[in-house]
Amino acid sequence: MSGRSVVVIGGGVIGVSSAYYLARDGWEVTLLEKGDICAGSSYGNAGLIVPSHLVPLAAPGVWWQGVKWMLNAESPFYIKPRASLELARWLWRFRAACTPGHVRRAMPLLRRMSMESLELYREFAEKELDCGFRQAGSMTVFSTPEGLAHGREEAKLLREGGATVEVLDGGEARSVEPALGASVVGALYCREDALLVPDRFVKGLARLAESVGVRVRTGTEAIGFRTNGSRVTEIETTRGAFSAGTVVLAAGAWSPDVGRALGLRVPIQPAKGYSLTYRRPARAPTIPLLPAEGRFSVTPMGEFLRFGGTLELAGMDLSINRRRVEALRRKGLACIEGGEGLELLEIWRGLRPCTPDGLPLVGRPRRFDNLVVAAGHAMVGMSLGPATGKLVAQLAGGSTPPADVRLLDPDRFG
Image (cartoon, rainbow, N blue to C red; front, side, top):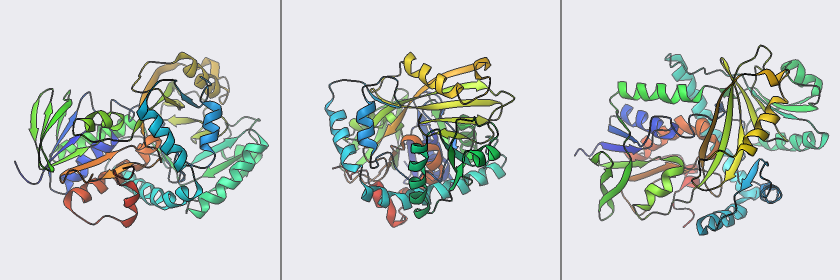
């Protein structure tokens, strides 16, 4: 076994990005994925690259808004009632993290990593990685004066964090995006944001990774480990054992289950989200839209139009809640002229890996010398994916990472 060998567990955007940059740095890389590449939440998400989104999931006001929503099965945020000590512990920590101080500490890190990813996406697009990358901007739209007033306050906070945000009235917003309806009273327009077709990117990057030496093993599930003191020596899988000098755990919402086999408590809750993909109509928005009051997204993806949204804490449950799908469909179609005639191509659901403070876990847990955790990116996995991959390669190689990544310490919750 070479000391420069690494096994990456997980074939989503984080795992594939990590494998690619590790191989670029000269590592002998094997990527294990229990299903197919990009079979999890990297597949059907909104495809947004949003350097403007600097506020983590845990933010002031989110807790109490969530309490109001959590018993409404059609709300943007829903908690399925169940007895779970892990969920109770997660909710307690989430509530504690919803503070202005936490947001201000997190914003510079999220800004730096998302801007780094944006530049890396441009580089991939220039390498002819065909993923529909387009720097189209994004527009958060408001249908009530109260919502717009809140948006103006949010714009001030985002500008403090370095984001470029324009506040538009209804008429100005419609001049930028003619597909907006008359009910829109204003918008936040972020020109630097971008979009892509997420599965095309992740699968394309996996092919690039293979071209630089990564061995991709799909249908290979990690089910156990062998350890020697503070080192992981072997990964036991459904297709035999793999030895490695370093292990990267990037299994998204499945990371707690994998980590448990190592005696690690990985504080991630799976949050189910949905997307509906339609054939793109003639009159569709050209800019991704984020209707603020409905908390969902409308993304024009080449020949497709995708509605994405909802946050459902229901454990490792991949069943389809038809009420929530219908609520997303209804809200999305209300944004599109003649929407009832759209051709539905796919209903998708996936599990987003959410930490209590809304920041991912990226780093070396103190219990093991040769393990790097890279998971818990919630709704910004695409935005932070390439930058996280580069950070994983730095950590694996022993380089000194930027100081602010201490906020991502996988042991920070004890």
